[in-house]
Every structure is written in C-alpha cells, then in structure tokens.
Amino acid sequence: MTAPPLDVRCIPNALPDADDVLASLLTEVAWDDRMRARRTASFGVPYDYSGQHYEPAEMPPRIAAVAARAAEHAGHPFNNCLANRYDTGDNTMGFHRDSYDGLVPDSAIAIVSLGATRTLVFRTLDRTHRIELALEHGSLLLMTRATQRHWAHGVPRTASTGLRISLTFRRFATEG
Ligand SMILES: O=C(O)CCC(=O)C(=O)O
Ligand SMILES: [Fe+2]
Image (cartoon, rainbow, N blue to C red; front, top):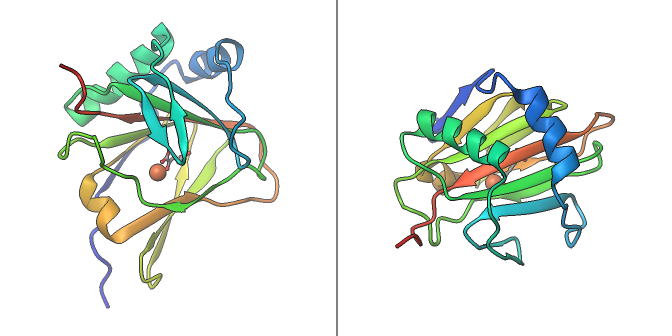
C-alpha cells in the first residue's frame, strides 16, 4: 500500500544565530516540570497542551525573533511558542497528532531544533509506514494540518545524547 502524503518541509540551518538562541534559552527560561517525560515552557497566547494549562506569557525578544524567522518560511505569523527541553536521551515525546483545536486551520506548525540531534519519527495511524527525520541544530520543520490526519509523530528514547530544545510555534485564532 502506498503511504499517505507526508506534508512536511525541512529547512536546515534556518537560524544563523542558533548557538546564541540555545544559550539564552538555558539562562532565561523558567522550565516547567509538571510533565515527567521532559520539561516545557510556553510563550505567547495561553495554551492547553498535553493535559497542562499554560498561562499567557510575553515572548522574550530572542524567541520572538525565532518566531519571525519561522513566519517568513511559513508565510504567516505565530502567536504561541511551546518549548520542549530534552536534557538526555531518556527525555521523550510519545506518539501523538497535533491538535488543531483553536488554531487557524490552514496555518502550519513549526518546529525549530537546537542542540543535540534527535530523531522525529512519523508513523501512519495503521503503523504500516514509518519515516524518520533527523532534526539538527538550527533546523526548521513545517507541518500542515493534512500531516496530522494520517500520521502521528514522536521523539523516542535514544541511548545517549546531549541536551536538545525544540521550539514549536503555532498560530491560534484567538487574537482580536
Ligand atoms: O520536540 C519535537 O521536535 C517535537 C515537538 C512536538 O511534536 C510537539 O510539540 O507537538
Ligand atoms: Fe507534535
């Protein structure tokens, strides 16, 4: 059986100042440890994510600059950033499909990767197809709503790796 289309765009080296962004995330962000699998932080409009509620929070200028960069590639602005911090290969994200509840339907979801390379695994809902993408420091990945229909994605455990932070950007339809 042929796989359903995976509507994903990968832009390597999308952030020329990736080292500085990573350094500032490590010093400036107050990380939330309510989740067991990894630490998180949310900026921008409020967000209910994976059973947690995140209050609105101003985007620090560095994150706002990354959002602007992602917006150039996506062709639209973003108003929330959910940051995921994976300190070791034991920090993971289980397979899931990103919800479009509250999002602008034709908007993209962006993932900016910083630090150690981790594998983002896509698999079809019936598990007959699997595609692995290595997410490198400074890269940008864009997914559409269509991607979420047939494919789940996750960041599995890996034997040994250093710290990685992903910045995921979404466009909520909540701004007046
Ligand atoms: O950390 C990653 O690259 C995955 C992020 C993700 O899938 C999400 O936040 O929904
Ligand atoms: Fe996701």
